[in-house]
Image 1: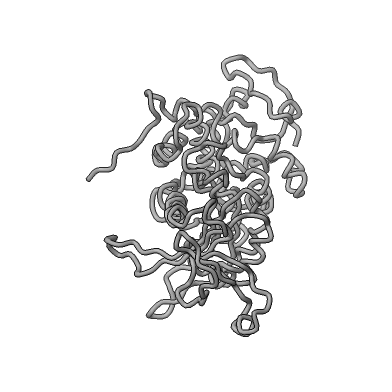
Image 2: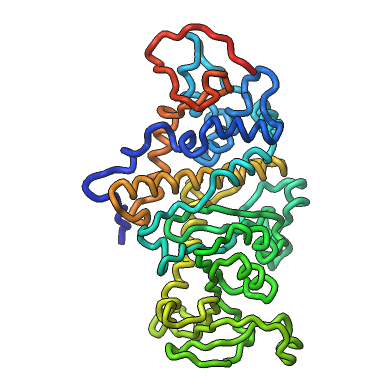
Length: 424
């Protein structure tokens, strides 16, 4: 059956909300200049590819994953043609682009993502909250890399039944808002790095008032203790071999138990953490497992009934959808990073995360304008609209002239311009 693309009600199109360009709206020029100054990566002299332009270029690589380096730059420069004094901006060679990206490095993109990414759901957003708690998911994936010695040494590659896989891979762990698919924190490392190790780098992004969903494999005494200490509530799935015997049965069929650091601690009843266990089955569902077990910090069944928590846990699968957006929908086919150097690959990952966040922010804003649900919008359609509008609405200067330091509106390209020197 053909999939029907949902749209905003009353004839409103998401293209109506694209004005100054999704990249420059989410990542304004003034913020980039501040980050470049803080990271020491600003252009020290006049260049064909100034640092600010290169930042936007790295993000544009994610929007135009199937285009060559030169074509991406040519498309991007269409948005700054108004700066030309009667001439035509030159498109740099591939080697010049690579050198400019190496000068920039991954640090500015990583810092930009840290400053920009945040939860987007406002109270009342459909699917964004459960009894006042913001729903977030902790989940991971892998991303293919070009087959180069440097990338293999840094990130490694998974094994296979006949040796090793065709490409190196990095492991990415994301902390995402369930209702908006906004990835507001992420960490990545080599393929051999465990998701539980990466999770420790993201726990400081959990806050009181959040309810964090996670699949089996994360539950362990140390990680659970650290996540619980953030003040956030947790609803994680249990491994089948993890023993949590019933200590107190509750009216809704769930029960209280204790999580211990080791079997020895359990035998001695030493230092256990009180948790609530919820068990349920999905009868009549093809492929369903015989028994599902969840563990949560929500101990009171009157404020978090077992049936509601069981249904709520399956919202975690929204994380799989957002990974499909990042790895398939946005690039147009299965994602493989194009960068063949370690520093540029890391830079490209943060550019990809910034673009996905910018697109999701745009969708949330468009849905809020008419009181809709972001899930009713098509991510595919959003990507296509932004690709079409980027050359027309990219309102940024390639360098950082004094008049633009505050990120003001651009001059009307139809008016004659008085020649003025640009600062490096």
